[in-house]
Amino acid sequence: MPTGKCPGQDNQKLTVSLHPCPKCGYGVEMFSDELRIKCPKCKTEVVRETAPNCLQWCASARQCIGEERWKALFGDDGPAGREPVEK
Ligand SMILES: [Zn+2]
Image: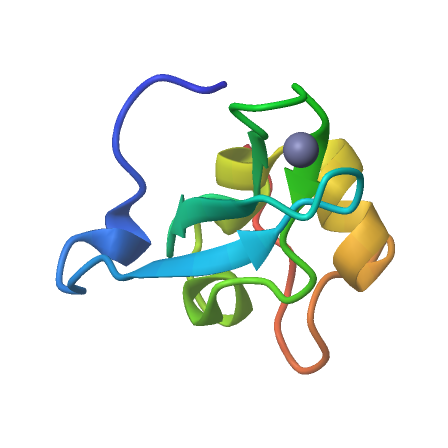
């Protein structure tokens, strides 16, 4: 994980939502800035299906979530209508 706080989250209240573990069905609590978390029961990785809104506009989103995840969500070019930010 990158160090430092995502600036896209600074003015947002984090919310917690329950995501059922795909393996054991346990309700895993996931904060709104988390994309994936390990199930405390069976250690299966639970992945959020939708990205936080800040990823659509935050200039640090690409670094925040990592290149691999970014491309999985948006492809190589990033969200439509926005230039990808170079490091
Ligand atoms: Zn589980």
